[in-house]
Image 1 (cartoon, helix red, strand yellow):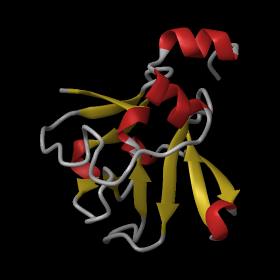
Image 2: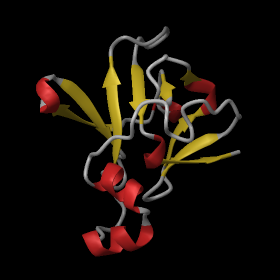
Image 3: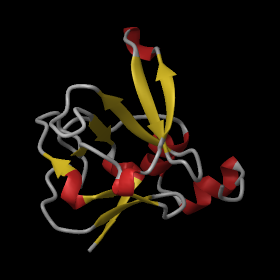
Image 4: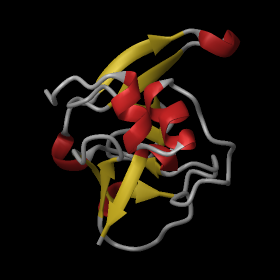
Length: 128
């Protein structure tokens, strides 16, 4: 587990949008994130703590408007939390190292997992 940071430390490290999404469980509008249409090969890391989270090898176009993955990198176990906000029940996913809000996971993804990790671009850093 990464060292606990204060809200002030997170605010000084992140942009306003990154803080709102990663630390306050916000979301970016569909089709606006910088990685939703990224086709480059590489690894997606947590914007807060640089934990490797997803590989481009498991990324696919779900049509949802957010970067979507059928599995975290190396079958990494993400923190999952029941989310009943906005009049629906979903499963929120967070970084296992720093608890940053990443997005949600749904059970309508492609084989082999049948999962769709719908992730905010603002919660990620992509490196080739």
